[in-house]
Length: 256
Image 1 (cartoon, rainbow, N blue to C red):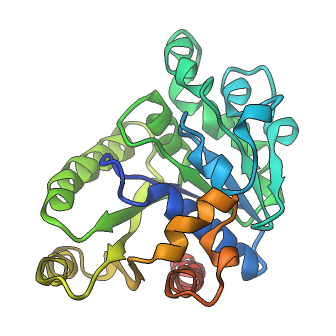
Image 2: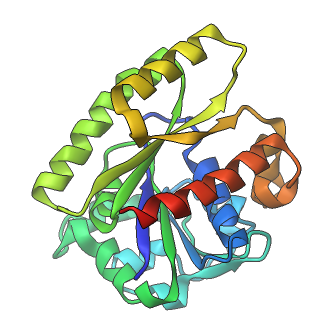
């Protein structure tokens, strides 16, 4: 049975897509079978995995509306060695169209159940807002990975996200839990980063992943080449950190 994780944060620009794509590639290098689900209409995870979102015949949009299934819509990332359920701008329309449908919060969960045996991990890259799409991701997942920058505003948004996860857990998905907080774009030279990091460890304890992802130019450059940073420059500090994070994830889920 596949372990399904959302990569979520209601704040934009915190490295959700970078984390989803590179964790998928890192897990693939550890010989795990991975499906990356792009649930963001911007389609950045799709492009970052080397798949042209402008040329998609079918995407997650058709899957959510019942016009296609995951087996037909999925693509393989040649650069990352994992499968992708891709997205493009059409997905923005699904928000409105799903309102009328049965089991509207669980459309993604139902769709992914058909390919459960094909994968060890399914990673869902959520949009930076609490929307019907994000709700579908949270209802489908066993747990949430929260990428966070160690800065003041990130702490502000974290309490909102934790409350959202608690509500979904109580009302829609009793399996849902926070798997861990991942510190990303970390700059150890900044005193604030150190302070916020210490606060996270104090409040969340072992929910904070030991792996820290540093601020790294090579990770930022990789998407323009349609490659995960892990394969674009395997020797870079960012790539090494995501490979270490993949190994930590494999160990952590053994305890779940």
